[in-house]
Length: 259
Image 1 (cartoon, rainbow, N blue to C red):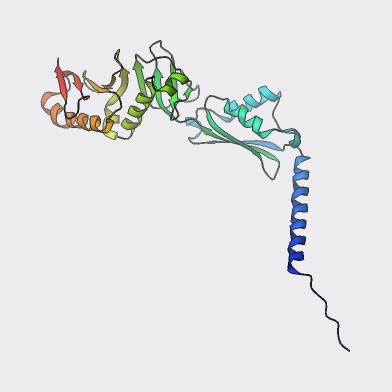
Image 2 (cartoon, rainbow, N blue to C red; image 1 turned 30 degrees about the vertical axis):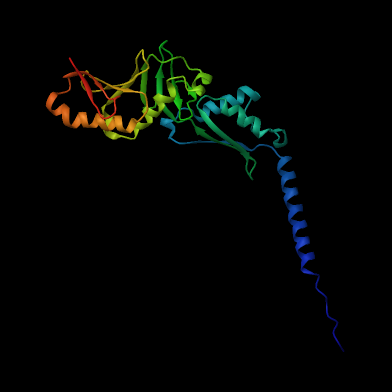
């Protein structure tokens, strides 16, 4: 007796069935997740350790509690607006970016990038603040004081529109600060940056009374190279107190004013 052959369904129907099953499982999982409650809150602050953080978990939790009246544990997941929570967390002046999501275990996860201070400013009216690499202003933290260069003197009040126009001293100061940070010798020498009445940026050293006039940030590498020449070739002969000003503004020249 001839055994009848069982026809297999075409491969395209097998793939279609697999896709439909996967989609059903996925949508069922999403529906189950959205109908659940927030199990717990996990905050991850990237960057420095807790002792060197501008912001901590307690700050973020307090921000959330002020907005929602309590922590988010136990809240229905479907009622959460993660984008609104991201915006709320990013309102903290020490937070550069926040990423908020619900993981597979119904845990609300908040990952935070802190602002990276590059310079501390004390403007001509005495206001003190930090700026990050995007020249965004933020205040002094009560948790931690970053070790950055300080700029003082005739610095105009912070104004984002003026900064964007290039008419504020901050962009030039930021370039100088980042250039000095890259040079271990100059960094070890520098006490602070000072802006005079003509908007010249002046490097104030830790050793000696002389001031090093950089002018603006143009050709900064050349100016810092001339400063190293002065330190290595002139200071050993003349000493640290021989000159009141060392002008590095002029191309190919080091102009010194004697005391």
